[in-house]
Image (cartoon, rainbow, N blue to C red; front, side, top):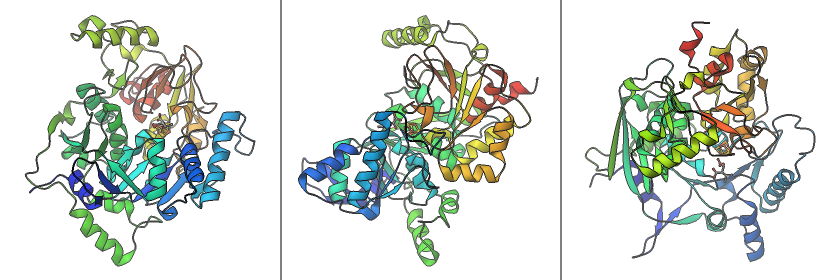
Amino acid sequence: MARTMAEKVWEEHVVRRADGEPDLLYIDLHLVHEVTSPQAFEGLRLAGRSVRRPDLTIATEDHNVPTQNLLAPIADPVSRKQVETLRKNCSDFGVRLHPMGDIEQGVVHVVGPQLGLTQPGMTIVCGDSHTSTHGAFGALAFGIGTSQVEHVLATQTLPMAPFKTMAVTVDGTLRPGVSAKDIILAVIAKIGTGGGQGYVIEYRGEAIESLSMEARMTVCNMSIEAGARAGMIAPDQTTFDYIEGRPHAPQGAGFEAAVEHWKSLRTDEGAVFDAEVVLNADELSPFVTWGTNPGQGVPLHAEVPDPASFEDPSARASAEKALTYMGLTAGTPMREVKVDTVFLGSCTNGRIEDLRTAAEIIKGRKVADGVRMLVVPGSMRVKEQANAEGLGRIFEEAGAEWREAGCSMCLGMNPDQLKPGERSASTSNRNFEGRQGKGGRTHLVSPQVAAATAVRGTLSSPADLAAL
Ligand SMILES: CC(C)[C@H](C(=O)O)[C@@H](O)C(=O)O
Ligand code: SF4
């Protein structure tokens, strides 16, 4: 029978199947960070267990790390404790850790792919919802909770409930200035933040195939914001070229053999998805959110919507509440919305290509008066590469702050936060109330829009800069 890619990867990993019980899946790669791992390691300790496969487990410090003055002790006691606990756990249990100051340290979802650990056909888990990022390689990658983290640490397996499949087909070609971020914001606006619930989404179609790996990761990263369990993209030459030569990629003949296997993972002709959504890339334009969930978005050229225009009473109520929190009035052109801060970074858009795109726009220009721009590379490796290409200097000369790697203002678990009432244009993935600091107001945008907004001071696209 014709099968989807998700079904194939799942089947290859079933180690136990029994009637009425979830399948027990083998896990190929377990990524760990400081926020969701302490109780899991503690559980092992209490049970006198070890980590079953330390060689398939890798940890990094990302959420709580400061992005400046790395040599100083972490000032916030809670953050310091989290990081110190991870260090002790990794040392006690023999888990490889990339701590602050290490060249491979960074946001866990940037680190896995850059090391070549993330590969097609794998099952990948992490105690983090944005693990869906790794699906960009044709891996089945799930976010899991802390008790599941403990289960994987102890057994390298996980019981998993069955999933449904959804195809999101994006036909056509993206226009200049329109990016992967706009695709995924448009998908979420279309299907809603619950639209993907219970599904593994496979993104496909001409527009997806022509995306780089970085851009594919942006799309898969936000699958979870549509409520999906995971997002995937079929591996192709773009994928193989990205992986080849990375530290953990198979080498030589092993690589050729791996590619042969990876090619077999594509969804079979005639395979049936439980649901299908179609979008046309030609019709997309830069997208921004106006509300407090990632589904509350509109094209940048539109206005803040009127809550009365929502037929569904709960959507209307949520729009009203969002506008109050965001301090916005219906009918205001999105382009006139003034920001205090621009955040370029996160596991959604903190990769080298994102920095290149933004640097190209900001080069020779200045960040607007009264606006602060934070550029936070997804990993120290990305920072090194960006510096080698002269991007760090471009940001600094424009007046932006060029920081060290981490999650940073994506969720403000470190000192990088908005003050109450402050407004940001942010390349991250969540615009929830208080996400970037208590009372902070977040507009999700692409790196292109972030850079143009930094220069104009109001939500803008690169096309708006031509007039300056
Ligand atoms: C802290 C972590 C559990 C959380 C997640 O699961 O996604 C964080 O990374 C986020 O983006 O909100
Ligand atoms: S960068 Fe943001 S979304 Fe990604 S793992 Fe960190 S906090 Fe979560």
